[in-house]
Length: 307
Image (cartoon, rainbow, N blue to C red; front, side):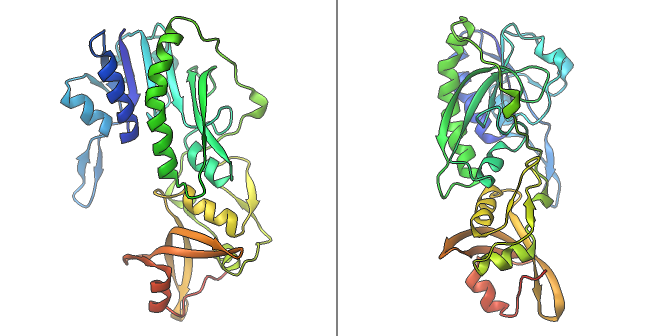
């Protein structure tokens, strides 16, 4: 069977490794589609994606232009990062299976793991769907559930979901190809949507932080920028979840006022809750190193979160 793989980050590269190991002798991976290299660092060196690096070392053809993608039996997509047009879907005899890290139809779009943590879900999971022209809309082939742990960050939950996804998709492919699985249409009335996360989406109003440190709930509603049509109250619980949801990127941040009314950005990497109060743990003032919040306050005892 001939397979084309769509993916970019390291956790999708791990799925590619399993597919390559299991199918390389029988048609195999005849191509990968991945994001182009991006300039990083001060010297703007080009950095290739983990999927690109894996394919390059094994001389698997790498495609960036949709028109160049060859026809194949099956496509597998895991965190590719681009919309796949209809003309590409038509190149595959059995379509493209999309490994999406949410229990669809909940949290369609680019940031489902972050949304599930920020919204306080008890469970997340992975849905494998047969792609159609709409965003994360196609029929569900199969899915699995994964409990969201109290200390899960975006990074830890994503890692765990994609680790399970590799073996899951390997077991699923034979039954799917043989037609043994009845595909299930998604319930459109239950659909919710997420957006690509931008750096500014990690912002928390200073007054939200101030109140949560005192164990108070803010009167203002809090719109989560990357989760459409979703608001919640800002308190110690919801802020702590948000901090985990945005770790390791874009990282939650707020604005803190120092002596002389100087306002600075303060990144917040971790926090906990004690006696219904938010306790900040690891922070970073702009231009400085990451320290404990206790160390930060010892260095800047006049620092305050203000409206």
